[in-house]
Amino acid sequence: MNTKIAYWIFQILGWGTYLGLGLVLVTNSNQDMLRWFPVMLIKTSLLFFMTHLLRNYFIKINLLNLPTRRIIFTAIISVIIISVTANIVASIIMLQPFKLITWKQYSLQALFYYIINESFIVAAWVAIYLVAALIKQRRQREIEKWQLEVIAQKAQLDSLKSQINPHFIFNSLNNIRSLIFENRKQASDMITHLSNLLRYSVKHNDSGKETIENELKVVRDYLKLQSIHLEERLTYKIDVDKELLNVEIPSMSIQQLVENAIKHGILELKKGGEIQIQIYNKNKNAIVEISNTGKIIEKEKTTKLGIKNVSDRLRLMFGNNAQLTLTQTENNIVTVKFNVPLN
Image (cartoon, rainbow, N blue to C red; front, side, top):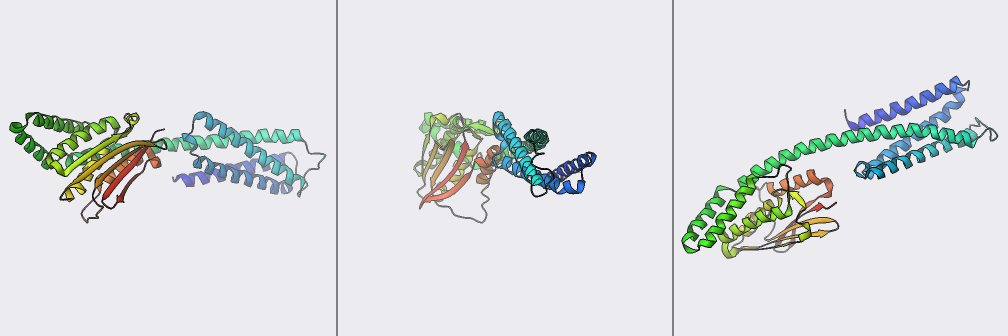
């Protein structure tokens, strides 16, 4: 059943039962039910409306993601405000205009008694709502967990197809063969870089996350291999805040974006260009920014698979707190940027 429909059924049945029980109590106490009905209806409607506003407030402040003490404090204050407000309004309309009681009959002790009773009812409403919201949140996280695993597995396959493709391996091996007799040390370094890249690509973290430090290690291997292959057509620079090295991001995310920068940027230019990777702290977010020489050109056959893959995984891991953007920041500079919340 749709959660919104379930909520409205809960509201209508719950407060409808409250109204019915109130009328039964009035009848049992030998009171005129017809005279008391408008007051009970107004009070019940007020409780209905205020608890609905409370639900919207809980959603707005994302209550379940707050610290436990804050949740308890917010719930208690909300119960008190609703109970006091509902009973004060009920007292006013009983005195005027319905005149069910006189000022002489009015008692602050009775008001306090009704507020206490009402608090238990509203507290029960809050408890039921929070339990239901918690169950929904856990189910949603479970669904997102499975979605993330599927996307991570697909990302691994896509990465193997796009990054460690036969052409790339062939070019790397060709370069190694050429260097064996010319520069043995450089050939040995290339073998090391290629080995590291292959090992990392087939050894994804099960959680779909990896530290920035480990991500940059494989990115450096990849860029060194590409710079040997492309020679002077490719230059690169990596600038990272060392305090962010242990921050976790989607595995292979930087690698995918760097490959996109080379494939759709550097390789499209006769003279090649430069790739800059900057990782810095801004407003309690780790910002990963990758810029390359080139222009954004929409092609009919392009799927933007790498960009979409990283964006989807960021959303599943961090929700709306993480965003990925692709922009033409300068006339000949394309920048892709994403953030990861540090808290």
